[in-house]
Length: 526
Ligand code: G4P
Image (tube, rainbow, N blue to C red):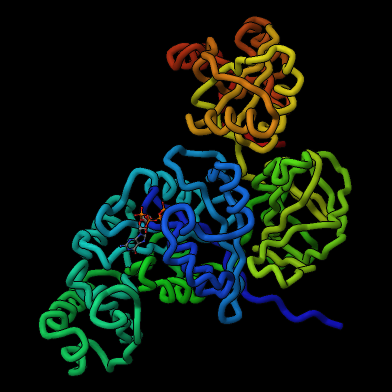
């Protein structure tokens, strides 16, 4: 029997600064998509308020919530794959790699704070990858900045055209509702307080006489004035410009009070790109290619502390994946039978046996699959652009109990495979060096060493401050350099040579003198 055609796919991530409302919005998107039905959940406070998925529960139990997860939900014939990115301030490799697996992003901004540091950093990552962005200006139910000031800030700071799709009628205590600038619908609060979204009224336009009755004299006057200015002063939505990353559609709303969340999902359905062509060698892979291809963007070890299992997260780039398929790992040429893939439908009643381009599947394995791996059904392709970053912090791990050195090595290797930290083996000396891009990765390392491997360890300084991968067109020149600098050379976990410098000055000085060598700050798995 022919299987039904797959739904349209929207694979996206939410980027934001901590506290802007990403968790609240995630929860509301899942509720709108029918993926969770926990009315009480919404009102619960603190930790309990966190959106629920099995992964998140596990993260809570472990007390670490810095890993990404995948949440799939459906609405109106569209399947949404929401890839969660860690919500902490450190730049993390995990976040970057998650953004390599999405087709678009939603940028959440707090209406009182505008663009904050982390939003901006993540935005830059999206721009590097040409990931188009829809902006959600959250918390319009609270006193915030003027909507024009917020839009101008996005336009100026991020160098994007902005196209507001809706407009708040007042803000904070004066908030009266949300007006859809294109459909001319008005979403009103439930009752007189602004606790939750209530009914929607269809108007004939901004001059509709009923407006005054619905939002009061002042509200109607304000909205008419502002909407006219907004429509005249900002871009109208050009889907091509949005998909090219030159324009951002903007939705005002309140995740907490259900304003604008439906508008956001509609905008994703209507404008966000379906699965995109992915850069690869020898040629980019289009989603309509017949055979299955995909890449691993994340590996997570010890999802179940009882078993030393690992889940590799694969983004499917082409073909129709079926449970039990054999795929070839391009880096080794080995065939891997994928008998028990994990699908991330939050409605776990549904057992999926198939997955399509844009979907994410989890592949349980014993450490064979690595971040950056390409998997193919037919002819080999290698996906590109899933890099390791040069560490900005290099440390040694001090062992509390010296008899545990074997466990420590296993743990460090595991976590390097997951991409939590990088691991360097110096050519001279026995003490391995861990490298991280942000301080938080070190904290995660130490707490996981204790919780999952029962290894009591601490962090101590290393003589080195920074590292660069080495390469040269002439292998002899590379070898000579390595011989001359043995105390400062280490190998990464793939055996690639790395130069470790005591400080930035030494790095610059060496790199300038050694013109035949390349010192690179990122490395992709070959
Ligand atoms: P994050 O994941 O981006 O860090 O943000 P999160 O959703 O946890 O939201 C941060 C705070 O902002 C929470 O309050 C949340 O209730 C509040 N918030 C989120 N969206 C809205 C909104 O649309 N309007 C208003 N008024 N507040 C919003 P908190 O006090 O830190 O947590 P809690 O005590 O409510 O749990």
